[in-house]
Image (tube, rainbow, N blue to C red):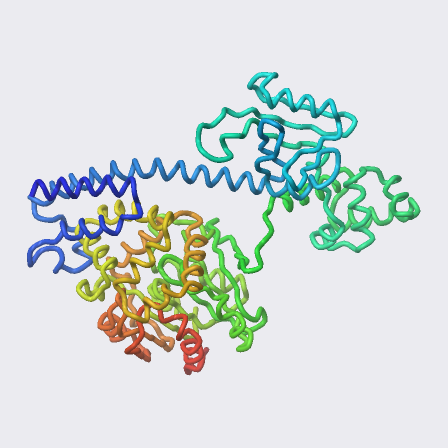
Length: 573
């Protein structure tokens, strides 16, 4: 037994160094936690998560938890360093001032996006070949002195009065690491001249809803700061310029020219600090709830179409609704994907339960002026939708459940695919084991998501494997996972543990018609578990699909929505 424990402990610390191997650790601990007949595995899920094991095993579990905690601390330290680098890179890329990393001969080794945009011309130019051109000879000589450390290692501010340029120079300690980082001698910020990002007339017109003539005047005011000079450059009378200025100030509720220019320049800096939005990026809308939390959502399809609420899977990785964008528009559907608290930018709330989302959905519907829309929930969104329908009978006019996850009393350990079976097994033994292994696992998924999804697929049905073997769907899943975990992945583990407890609501109180579809080869939620849930639901139409697994949403989502929207709603709806 001691040798087995030593091997397990060794595996724990190996996983801390190589978190991509966390599934092997999960397997090892799951085998270690197996107990004899009549013990925790056979107890109800709600009880087994709370009742301690036999006395001889309790001490061993506590020892294992102690080693896991140390391993997690070590892994967390490395994780923190990696995340710190990520944060600094984001700051570097989004900084609104030109930033340059210079080598020994003032060659530009790296530059941020703003530098590439605004140093194309002017007294300081960044050329395509990476060389730096500085019009002021004295400024260039001063920068050369700083770069060769002739002025010491302290930060230096260099100025060129004739060109209105200021350079903030930070000499850096030479790195012995391989690559271009070892060649960096000085980091330079251009703080004046080019750094004054003048907003274009087009940007001013779109942001402030002013006329084309007014936007041209405001653009020049931001650039030259003088109304008389601006009117001359525009070839208009000073009286016309004053009239346009007064009109703009009235529209923006601003009382002085200084305040107006400051306001416009502030927007320009914000625009410069933002990376261009990619065409395939969805816009995340937000509303502030009554308790101050933020709830976010996405919209797809026809903005003026029939509203349909939807909730995505546990982990917020599926589906990618842009796949169905054209179909939504053709059908006149306005799909509203509600982002559950803890995912995306919806505020995390400690001890948030399935039954808590109904109130937030109700607030959102009132905010959007939507009354009794259909709700279509997939996978981990199902328990939230069920609780909302039971507690708020007037919230939806119908409810759709596709491959929905279940509360603990419907889970069948022996019918789950390996990763979920092992996770459920150690969760029932002691939730702390699951949370600690999960923290190692989260880092493994973040570092190597492709590897994780391929391991997940190996234990699933052929139809589910086909989803993750599809490069496009796999890339979409990884992208959505990263976007959903903007606040970290703790919510995903907490949601998993919530499945070990009863929902805490009476599902018989649901009054709307329910459509429930489930794949018969689902390895995450067995078909028998899904049938047991259907038996507990009133007004349900249940369908099973022999050749489908858990991830059938991409193949059947359109058919599912079509049938859901054709259900007969109660007469009062």
